[in-house]
Length: 231
Image (cartoon, rainbow, N blue to C red; front, side, top):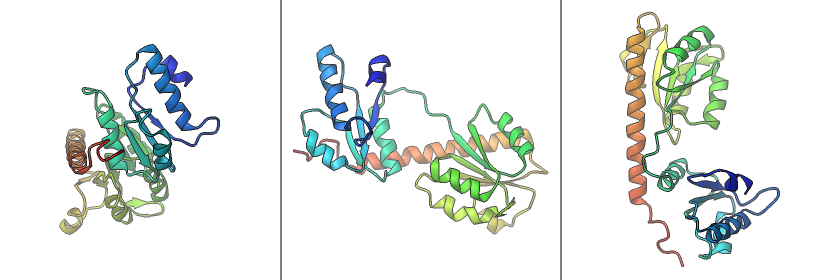
């Protein structure tokens, strides 16, 4: 509540179970404060395990843009946030996960690609799995020879992610045509130039952006318009 009074926000996501105050009380306080000061209503997205109970408690007295139960459907979450935000905001910076145990190579590529995306590094398969469980990435650069196994073992998990990243192999090991068809791009460390690498990264990031934009558009078209059918 203090932050809302001190800073202008375009939207708010809100849990209903908080340590010091019920989320439903925050909604009431914000709406009453906005009405008293003649402010436009702040778009609010409730994300909570008791979202439905909160919707029934609030009713139609204090409008909320959307209600979403945990565990979260990431595609629907992103669609709802995009719906709430003002048009014309800059796109978020793409994120790349580089699964590679050579720290020097990671640093070089990080510097090279700093204008394209934010890079995150995982030196092992275990570390990559932990990061993928917590974060969404637009692109995964994957080495095949890792301290705890082959990079190939990560492919099925990458392809099953709700927000599937593009996958690029960057390895010292040559792969067969059949193996190359399992990923979106293959580059050999010994043969790739800086120009080729940057061009390939840009292409793959754009493909991710286009695919996800189409997915969100389809999701929005198939969803019931917000507020329709409610009493």
